[in-house]
Length: 79
Image (tube, rainbow, N blue to C red):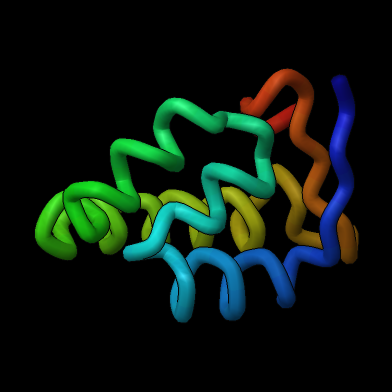
């Protein structure tokens, strides 16, 4: 299943602000990882920080640099 999100909203709201609650994983369709992240409060913050860094690199790096949307296919970054 393909999901599209505005990259700024996804990175700064879902990953940065709500990442410790697993909202970013739920939005991508990764329910099991979302539940694990919620239970562990983002892996005591470490998992949430790593996911935020990955989202920053993917969204603002060469993969999606000029596009305004992030595309996820089955929970994985499409590019």
